[in-house]
Structures are given as structure tokens and as C-alpha cells.
Amino acid sequence: MKNFVLDTNVLLHDSDCLRGFADNVVNIPIYVIEEMDTFKRDQGELGRNARRIARELDGYRESGNLREGVPLPNGGIVRVVMERADLPKDFSISHTMDDAILSSALFLHREEPHRKVVFVTKDTNLRIRSDALGLHAVDYDRQGQDVSDLYTGTAELVVPADAIDLLYAEGSIGQEELGKTYSIYPNQYLQLTAEGLASKTAYARMVNGRLEHLRGAKQPAWGVGPRNREQMFAIDMLLREDIQLCTLVGKAGTGKTLLALAAGLQAVTEKETYRKLLVSRPIFPFGRDIGFLPGSVEEKLNPWMQPIHDNIDFLMTSQSRGGRGSSGRDGGKDGGKDGGKDLKIWTFETLSDQGIIEVEPLTYIRGRSLPGVYMIVDEAQNLTPLEIKTVLTRVGAGTKIILTGDPYQIDQPYLDSVNNGLTYVVECFKDQAIAGHITLTKGERSPLAELAANLL
Image (cartoon, rainbow, N blue to C red; front, side):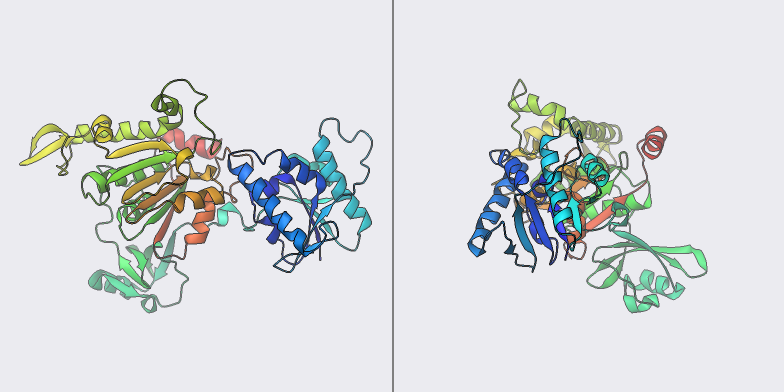
């Protein structure tokens, strides 16, 4: 049995963390309780977590004295530590609360040597300082994995040549045709290569336990065609109605947002599968009112939503140059004739005026219900797991939701590349038949952008 000592940021990051340390002792310094008290009136996620932890601890009081320790449902023990040990002289000048929390961990280290003390904090500098005191300090990582090990949504398999021939002939094959057993998730995209013949390949998707051949997978979405294999898989996933939850992960310039917007516009304006395209992104921090900025709501949102507008402008420019087939909707501008078909040149203004596209922040999503919508949540890596749950539980009947983001570009101080809402959803939904995921690795914005993303 170990003594885990939790820092304030761990509780604010994950309000379910008390039950995440198995049958060990979870110690909360009284100074953490005091520090959390300063967050309880916050209207954002930090405030909600602070209030939830306080209610949970208050509930445990009915089972015993928190100072002596109260049993947890998972077999562990939670207790509040009142004592502290003296730190070395002049150890700190300005880290008053951090020092108090460290001193509680040091007290347990000295008074209970039979239990190894593990100080858990998401504060990098505090881990360094605790190490200087001889304390074992770790980051909080409930999933216990590196971002490079996360599910990618794709795989390459070397299979018998007969399996590929059968796939082309029948359209789908069972796993028994592959020659060996593989662990393949629902909606996982595969490149099959024939044994001893690298030029013989096929693309497939796992559907209901069978590999379904991707016929015509290189189709464009609203004039935007795939530039690499992962983009081809992504477009196929984004356009399929049976996949209701899509996650796109990738570094800057891989085309996450552009592909999602192109697929959404095609699904709404041409297929008319959904009644509108809703594009949103978190205003950091999540839940902060936008009233501090001058102007109307639209004017206040412009700085936050400009990346979305940039991608839409690019799509509109490409569409006006190449022309699009008639979608059946009214209000498009007549672009002339091409092969006997009326072409309509959409603009952002006509799409917005008709209610076909809507761009708004996630700040006001709580309490809403969104049926029949193609919804894109950009920069989803800045959402906590609980915030992601709030978004997904707004999804109504007939809605498809796309989450995009880069786990390496996180602005939230209490999130990291693994413990954020986006990667949390990827891992939780990877074995669900209604969900799909693609990790995009190759930048297509420009050679310079790709080089900068890799070198800097």
C-alpha cells in the first residue's frame, strides 16, 4: 500500500481522481482543500470540479473521520492531512501554498516510512522541487500511456494474395481469409498488401466483423480531394452516415479542419442529409463570457473563429473557380452552364443567411439539444473529458459530430497531450461501431509549414 499525495491541480483536472489509485491511501493536504475553496465560485470547468470534489469529500464524512481515513468504494482510503514538516531554510520565497502542500507530503514521508510516498502533481516545477526534497513525484496520467501509443484508426496488413482477389471480387471478406487473427477495431481503415507482391494492394474498412472494400474511396468532398492515404480514409469516414462520431487528430497543416468542413458542406448542401452545418470551437478558457470584448456577438467572436472563416473562404474560392453541381437548395448564385447542369456558386453569406452554416463558440452549448446537424468541434484538445461529455450529450437524433485537434498544441494549463478530452474520446470509443478515428500525419498546407511542424 502506498501513500499518494494529491496536488490541487490533480483534483481540478479530474474530479473522479480519488478512485483512480486502486487500493492505496489517497492523501489530500488541508492546504489543497483551502486552495480549492478559491475556485468554487468559478463558472467554468475548474469551478465545477472544485464543487464536485467538495461534495464527494463531504459525503465520505458519513463513513468516518476524514483525518483518520475513510474507505473508498474501490478498496482504497482517502484522508485529509493536517500535519506538515519543516522545509529546508530558504527553500522557497514566493511558493507559499506549494510549500505548504509539499510540507504535508514530506511529513508523511518521514512519519510513515513503511508506505512509499508518491506526490502527484501536474505542475512540472513542483515535481522538480519535490524531487530536490527526496520525494518521489509523478505527473497525473490516469490512462497510463504516451500520446504516441494512442489508437491511430489505421493499420497496414500483409495478407495472402488470394484474400485481396476475393475482396475485389466479393466486396467484403471475413477475418478468416487473412491467414491469421488480427485485433481490428470497428471502422478501422486498413491497407492490405499481398505477401511477396508489394504492388498488389487494397483498401478496406472493418464493418460488422468483416472487411469491406473501399470502392471509389478517392472521391473528393466539395471539390477537395485527398492528397495522401490518411486523408482518403478521413474523407470516407466523414461522408459515411453510419459513423456518427468522427475524431481527427493531427499536427498543424494536415487538413483536419478543411476536410471536416468540406465533407460537412457536401453533406448539407448536396446530399441534404443534415439540416445545417454547425461549426464551433472552445473559447479559452471554456465557459468564459465574451462580453469583455467590444461590439456585437459576431464581432466579439471574430478573433476566435477566424481560423474557421479562413478555411471556409478557401473552400468558397475553390468552389467559385471550379464550379459545383446544383445542390437542390435555393439561394445560390447562378454560375452559368456546364454540360447542361446549372452551377451554383455559394458564398459564406448565402450559406449563413439561409441557415445552412452556423459558426458559434462552445460557451453556450450546455442545455442545448442538436438534432439533424453536421457538427464540427475544432480545437477539441483544449476540452477536458467532462467538457467533451457535455458536448457529446447535446447530440440529438440524426446528428453527426466531428472532433478535430492537435494534442501537442494545448492551451489549457491543466491538460496535456494524453489527458485531454479529444484523446480521451479516441480511446473510449475505438471499439464502438458508431465511431471512427483517423490520425493524420503528413502536412499538406505547404512544404514550409510541414518543415516547420517537424523541425520546430
